[in-house]
Image 1 (spheres, rainbow, N blue to C red):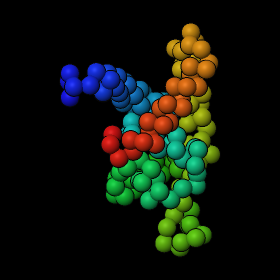
Image 2 (cartoon, rainbow, N blue to C red):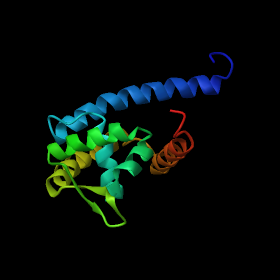
Image 3 (spheres, rainbow, N blue to C red):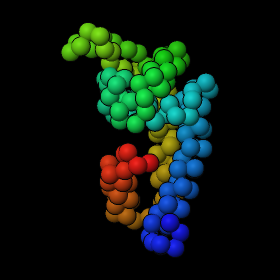
Amino acid sequence: MTGADPSADALERELTVLFRRARAASGELARAVHPDLEPAAYGLLVRLQEAEPERATDLASYFGVGKATMSRQLRALEALGLVDREPDPADGRAFLMRLTPGGRERFNRVRRARRAAYLRQLSGWDRGDLADLARLLHDLNESTAEVL
C-alpha cells in the first residue's frame, strides 16, 4: 500500500498509533476499575453503561467477537462483582447483563477521571474540532466494523 495512496498510508499509520496507545490505556483503566480486570473488559463496561441491559450475544456482535469470548469476559466480570445477569423476559434461555451498583460506582469514578484527562490533553483544541473528531470517529467505527 505504501506509495499507492498517501491518504491511505497516513490513515493506516495514525490508526496504528491510536490503537496501540488505546490498548495501553485500556490496561491502565481496567486496573483502575479493578486490579484483576482484563484490559479488553474496560470497553465492555463502557458499552454496558450506555446500553444496559444487553444480551451477551448482542454484546458479542457489537464488538465483533465470538460468543465464547464474550461469555468468558462476562463470567470474569461477574466473578469480580462488576456485572450481574438477569433472565431475559423476551427469551427464557437468554440473560441480560448489567452493571452492579458497585461496578457502576467503580466504572464511573474511572470514566470521570479519563474524561477529565482527555479534556486536559485537548484543552487547546476548539470545541467544534472536538465535536468533529468525535463525529468522524463514530463514522469510522460505523463504517469499518468488519474491517478493523
